[in-house]
Image 1: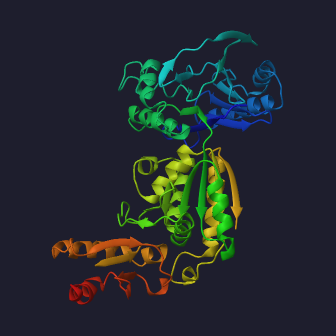
Image 2: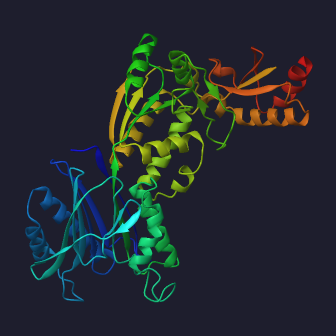
Length: 390
Length: 79
């Protein structure tokens, strides 16, 4: 094992006027420290395509997880998929990216657009071996991984963007590569990279996609620990212990909450300097303490971080806000969603008497709820989360 | 003279941003930047009386509506 890990993110847009997407992505983590991501594109669009692609990706991921060979998977798919009544074929193209122990990637491609690989911020070619399984031509590659390697798998809705409209023959592979190259290793999450590419696809279609389009991004990155302190301990005598544990942890340190940051400043013997810069009118300003990477207000800020986290897992429309803005919630979001891979929450259960005022929309149960929901969201982003209560 | 406004959760919800903005405006308008040091602070433990403001360690409860009066009566009189 090394200290690398895979950050996997994907997004789809539907054929104009369809409620279901004909592309499907399935990601599973296996017990042998490998992760399998499958992107399947079913023939046509709508319900039929959706069933084909869901079946295909589920069959592949489940069978590979059970240790069966790729040949078995492909044969099972061919034997299982229902035959399209219009076209008389059972058909769903697929791409499989399997990352083994963050050391090696296996890429298997069947009729989807070529998987793009970026290394050190440059588009990079990689060797492919052609196999013939059940009459299907399948390309297989094995690649030794390095930090910052990025793989982009797409359904054909991406290169078909703008056909006959913006471009004569659609958005060519080399042009997509050139579009993504400058941002391939600047720290964007896999989810954000797939959003950026897909937003451009959507634009090239003029907002009315003529096919389902999906991007699956797999990014190899270094593990990055992060620690977040939120709230004073329920027993004041535990302050010293909580602080000692928090500051002994490797990685960056974020402190959330007014009272909490006062305790931290006392512990470190450094002044707490709040700013009065309201970058975002709804989010209280941040503060600084020497030795702490970020100091923010508590409940209101974390509540916004949770909203950003939920959006990041869904449409990812607000990344343009949090990835540039300098308010407390945006800064935390950037550190938790983009920088961190392993997050330790140190949550204090002290009840702030001032917050028990019924006029205020903040209270103790809301605070605990925020921590639970936020850690669930971060887990869905593929992060390792540990929550300790004091 | 040190003028501090609480920017903690509770005071934030009661309008500390508006109070800060009004004070910044009044200080600039009266050309008092050299004399008044306006800053933020976290919880003073008197959230019920927010927005909490201190003037050289004396405590005042200010709201966005009373900020201008507070400035004229309490701050200006001390100069």
